Image (cartoon, rainbow over all chains, first blue to last red; front, side, top):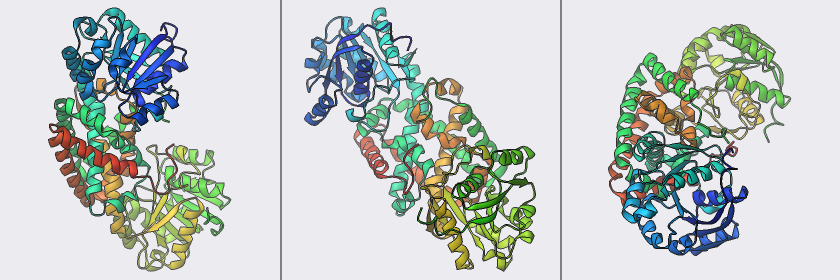
Length: 299
Length: 299
């Protein structure tokens, strides 16, 4: 929390896409006394009413430009494929010195969208960010002031990004308890394909394969805690994950190829216990040695 | 806990393989006042000393026959490929009326091993069981009196199994908080290949594929809570899982084929957002609708 002292309060925060990620950012700033006013953008009247009723934001609208007007910090938290259109809609209302951030799980496509939608002055205030946090439960009702505590946030600044914008972004993420890492959008997308996007694809495919079987429903009745955890991410939001997997398809395909080669080796070893034990042992050792960097212990 | 009242106390419990599963059974009975004496079998002197020091068992030995002698309940909790040799070793010491159970994650191979190792009288007292519970952490130090609470236990009795042995087994599993289901070994193995064995194989392969990459270690530093849960089962015990996957290889291969077909469909859809959303949505709905039957809420 060393960053908490460094972050100046946000006067008006616009949360464009007021769901789990954006709502949690608003709650986290407010809980730390760093938020004066928050406005949320959501498409459905019901989501807007909920965000206000829950106290996540002070007001809500369906118009990104109206929300961005007068905001000193704008957080974009929409499915990544909606980035360009959303930025185009809000850019005319964006103050020249407002800090603009996103929380998208892919970065190369988001950066390209920002380049297409923003003028040079506003592009210099954009600090792309990906907080490695979340739940399989979407929606503002799950927003939580501690979602980012202990999480890593990867920022992928552009060559054009202003140094003070980057410092402000880092201070805010640190204020809500996150650790900030900087890398290129390409390095981010390659790494996340491996540790997040492919696992989601595999979990979706595993549940799909099970559900398609004639006995699938009966089998599911026997699933236990291992299945519960292995497939938790398969419950994730379809719009969000369609966009992530589509945007990062090339890296995801490369990771899928590596996975298929490993699966081939494991399947071939099903008939060879000594070889099978060796492969399992290698995986088991890696997994036992791993601990989520900076993340809180398992809930 | 309706079964608790029905279960008569165990006079002497022999836990053959005194690790997480066997140790938890002993602890669970003891915590419910249903255990007078427990003896554990472990190969290593260190494991034996630990099991006694932790109060999981009253005494420990490396000799299955010595443990089984005088026991009214014998619980076999060794990797499944060790079943036949272990049963041969303890059978001569087994009282004619002792209840014999196992906790193996495969059942057809365990039943075949029992048929090969036991005479007719003792085979009639064998009630094969698979508690769908556990952790990725092996070892008696993780044994816990509540491991089986809310879990399902599948029993796969033989045609020769005596009705009173089956009733006694069911009463004991219910006494420790489990719900008992009865099915054939073949139906068990087909279902568990789908909901447990294939997920383990996929998790092992996913971690292996990641670890094999030049950038694997760097990528792992960015892994978050989704990866943590998806790969938790990849930390499982190599001896236990070598045996399970090898014993149930045919069913595992069939499930792997179904999974590969689903993965093909998802990969093909990476370039087609509408199709990709449909597939994700189908998986996400199935997973959100699923709840572990009778299991406690997520820890």
